[in-house]
Image (cartoon, rainbow, N blue to C red):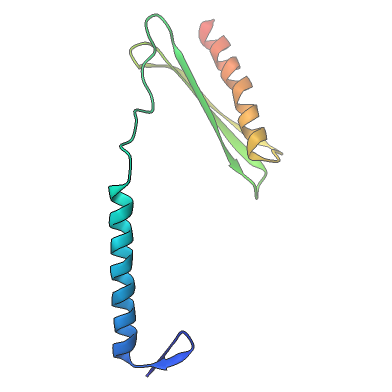
Length: 113
């Protein structure tokens, strides 16, 4: 006998429960997959003669730290410049994102020189 959900149950009863649970998960996964939208293109090259600057930040609440990344690409999609910055004493994700744009402006300025 096994204890399952606080009750003594036979191996067969527990096995039946697990099989039923797995079947339910399979049905739910099939529903989820059938309702997914195709992923849209996330990034596209800018029109000639423009460049595109992408920046983002990652945040660690436990360490109060963030990392900022910046990538500059030309109209062919080639990386023209990139950088990362490590930031300390960041209190929240919004502050981490706010810290990322000055670094992107600095990278643009360096790139333009």
